Image: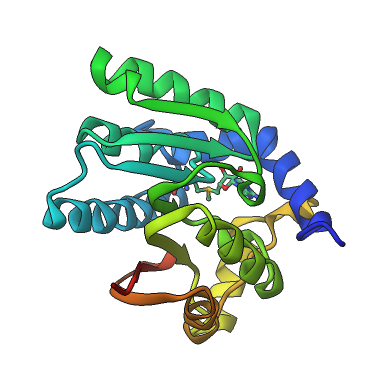
Length: 234
Ligand code: SAM
């Protein structure tokens, strides 16, 4: 048995533990010293998170529900979910990301909400537990489609009724790749970006028994992300 995405995964883990941590921690903050590209990505990412939170709010049932946020970064989704009353188990392959998410949760949430959120270091393919909703936001971009298929299978095994995943759509692939390439110059191979055809992501979800219920899409100059809400049909 081969380890899922072993080569890419180690590079990604190393990147988000070190160089990438500082860069993304700043993007996912309100620090004014970001450049125009980083600001664009910050705003695009905030829209993706808002789309997911708007779905949760429309359903109106976050309180008491269990959420698993796989690849949680600095807690941009996990923290507002806990604030809404959800019980959140968040994890990230990068220990520095998971630690920053825990720090932010303690700083930003009141004590009862903070107590509803836990953060740890883990590969999303090696999670345990069973959650009402599993979310995996802006993580797939770091992996080729074969890994995404396996990640969706692993996440599906953890999700009771809903799986939310986002990915960078393959539409306009060439121009996006160029832009991403410009944003991530330098030697680190961990900064490769993979685009995914929505049909491939949907097929991977359907293969795990999911039905797509809601779709969202955010596109700005430097940020592209489609988000899918998949549910188990009764
Ligand atoms: N989901 C967060 C958000 O939307 O704010 C963070 C997105 S950030 C672009 C990608 C995150 O995925 C990084 O924090 C990275 O460490 C994490 N990651 C990458 N591969 C992972 C894996 N195999 N398991 C868990 N986390 C992973």
